[in-house]
Image 1 (cartoon, rainbow, N blue to C red):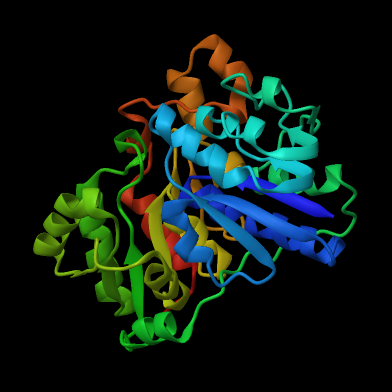
Image 2 (image 1 turned 180 degrees about the vertical axis):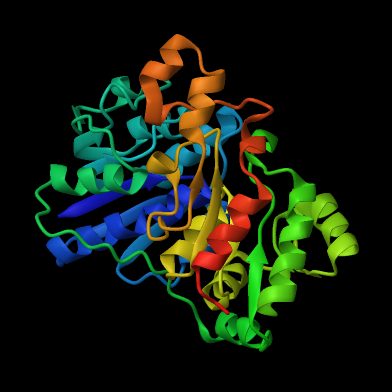
Length: 332
């Protein structure tokens, strides 16, 4: 069977697709799997065995669409698993030749997703990982794999090995400011961990996070690796960490994939939908309180699937909430 999977972004969703891909491989070992993936995220998974990748540049113009059509035109598949319902991904589906095109149910669809697929998975209130696995079930997968690990090479392992003192990682910034915890709150947490656990704090993030990380470095003495690692080096760093502290952001899923404890900070979004799947015990989730305080009646009915980007949502998480979860890791 020739299977095409489309998941272009985001970083967290890319990582959460790994159990789904391994489920396909487990159930259909002779199948040929092609993953159309966003070009920036391909390097993270380039060592994943048994998958042919088509790294896709971001679609920004009509010319980009024409180039995408040429990239996809020579392929033919038995089934397309349309696991992304954004406008950019929806516009690619007509260019992919497949006998079956399976997409999301109407509730999880957007940007006219239903016009570009022929079949839909059934609706369930479920985590994003479980939603991906439902695509595998739709083509007959019976045995589920929950292997979400990211294959790394010697170079990345060597990069992480240079940090020989026990450390923890803080990734303070997400894709939206409304999902970020008050940056000043990290300062007493860093001091608490240094004093009580003797761990070295390491800051990570992308180029757009540098101002915040530089400030935290100056005020707390953290080792600042913001914008200084590749995705694969970041993955190796998170693999070796004692724990990660982060809001709802991609690195949380990378750490979780390796079994690294994640103290996830959730309020505008629900961890029941997008939380680090293998690190549920230490998540601090105030989404229900945000719904009660700030949601409109229709949003309250949507519940688990609604995002409430209220400016005060993350203030519901306190420093004490975080230090209690750190204590629960029993790292003393």
